[in-house]
Amino acid sequence: MEFEERLAALATKVENQRGAIQTEEATKNAFVMPFISTILGYDVFDPLEVVPEFTADVGTKRGEKVDYAIMRDGEVQILIECKKSTGALRIENASQLFRYFSVTNARIAVLTNGQVYNFYTDLDAPNKMDDRPFLVLDLLDIDETLLPELRKLTKDVFDLESVISAAEELKYVGAIKRAIAAQFREPDEDFVRLFTTRVYEGSFTQKARTQFTALVAKASKQFLNEQVNDRLKTALGASYSAPVGTSTPSDVVTSQPVAERDIDRDTEITTTLEELEGYQIVKAIACSEVKPDRIVNRDAKSYFAILLDDNNRKPIARLWFNAKKQKYLGLFDADKIETKHPVDSLDGIYEHAEAIRQTVRSYLD
Image (cartoon, rainbow, N blue to C red; front, side, top):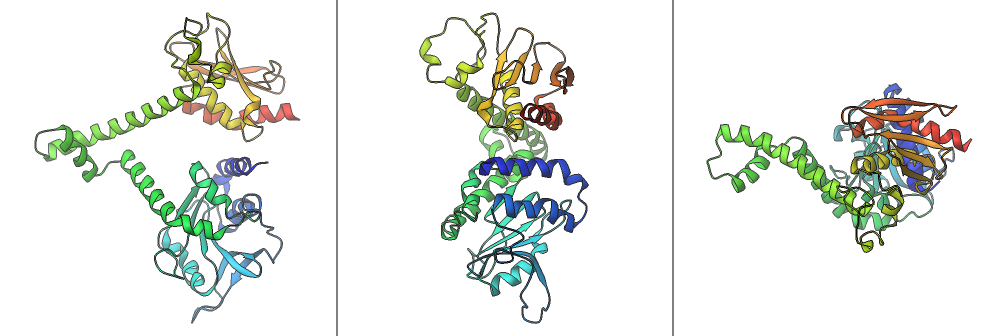
């Protein structure tokens, strides 16, 4: 599998098993060791590459251990400290990393609970681990812009200098993105005041603050949704407000082969943006099992079909989105018998992720 596919497979495992993992040792075995081996590419059973329970006596501290040390050419390059998967990561959990960072050659330290991986280096002071990570990888919410830098830490293409040189920008860009996300989820007073004073001429009183806190939060969410929808429309090459098959200049879609595949030949069929968004969700789920280009769609009058290898005998799912009230996701069992599951929103598709993957796997078997 490709790097991204291996990462997606591990993310699926974390999503499915995280609730059952209750101890730090179980977290290491189920999530962290697979991350070291399948993602970073190091042999966890070769002590020349990965040293578990790594010990380096520091001052008066004797016998303290870091969970894993990744070695290259006999030198420690990466230190990894693990916490149980159900616990949040705090810098207070990294006391051993701080001490060991200053007495080894390691330039990268990782604090993880198996789902979130915080990567640290020494940007603020030489040989002293920073308080803030320069890279945060959440397997359940992967930021794809970080993957090129993560790949540089893998065994085959290890490029520490490149990672360190990019670390400062990564650190602050990542922190700013997380701060923006936090404000969009729950805006604080300064954020609300910033936008209120630009659109409201009155004083920023307690009443105004209460009123505009809700308005700013609502406007932020609507703005994000509109941006996502605009990006999706652009990627698919059309706005689906008009029925498919109406007279449209041919050059509108000639540069959009993806859109051409998504439009049914039947002129009485209207492919909606919601159907295409649902298709992209099912496709993203199924990509953990097969390459994306093997997952295609065919729209029909009653339903929107998603198939493996464009083969009617290999249905993955059907989107029954044409009804005005209740929408359904059609899934197939081993005998290809369809069961319709009600979904109230597109997010409801994710609740059936494992069933979708199992259907794909059944065709591969």
